Length: 447
Ligand code: MV4
Image (tube, protein in one colour):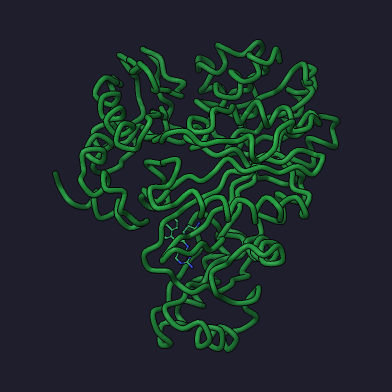
């Protein structure tokens, strides 16, 4: 096992990784920008290194500074967290080239899944169901027309280098196709430097359901069930659940069996998440994320496992030591992402937190780097706390979340706490019957 891990991240996820290391007897190195000198992840780590000025490109994205910090502190391995360099194949390659272990998949798999066309082709060859669409990149507008006529409108044109909702254009009919084709390619070129696009049938009311997987370096792959991440606004998730209110255990098991068998063939390693759209009782793969995700705690709550410890173990070459049948799902978990934003306009609201009080009690977990007197810097993501609850049933989890939200105090800045309370109180949310479009409508309606 590693003796010392450098955590190439900040905020709650840096703390999350530190906690797993601490319990495993692994020393931690925090890296931080000058804006984060007093941050909780720096305070708790065994050692810390300042890697640059506030702007992320000069600090948390500064590969040379991070590798230097690993070198001078004698770290064995680097955990990238999520965001920043976590899905940068070149970074993973550099980490390994400098003799450190990258706690994540191989650079080759990160690169493959970063290319959404290559990812779909890989999944197709493994028998994972896809949304009907083009067979790879669209070579011309004529080809786009032909594919759309085969799969029928409405269709989506997506950027090969996109993901997370960037570079998507819908065409509802043939006369919208040329415009969608041109705009999608122009935007893809500008945003990613790559104008390759592909086409999918547009699903109009799907749920977003994702499957958590873990692989060791000995060909063993397991899944830890699904998360329902349909509750999002402008591609930012607000609430996640495990399991999905829409899925039966049999549907989950069937998908899981197919995916784990496929990833074993692919030689995938470490943690990963496959994203699916789910509509009319059918799964369709859209993307794979090759990192630990923000919402991983809901999975941990229902499975009773520590995903970061598992990542560390398999990165160190250990065998999983258990099989799919050893993994069971108990109860229901919900996560609310509390951000430093106005709960109505979503305008960023950084600044000093006068009073911070975390809720507690049975089945309540708070992952946060906040403390009373902490100033939330304006330079980074607005996530300040993840409030996660577990209950025997979904109804108990919702009641527990409402109680925990009412206890929580983040005073001095605006946060999305009141919005989460409104969501939990809503009858349709409580029914579990919602799609990816539900929340945008909900936040558009007043009171
Ligand atoms: C889609 C879709 C409908 N049909 N693909 C948006 C983010 C990216 N991961 C994929 N996205 C979508 N792909 C087809 N064929 C609708 C979305 C989508 C979405 C997906 C998941 C969660 C929230 C979403 C919000 C808007 C659109």
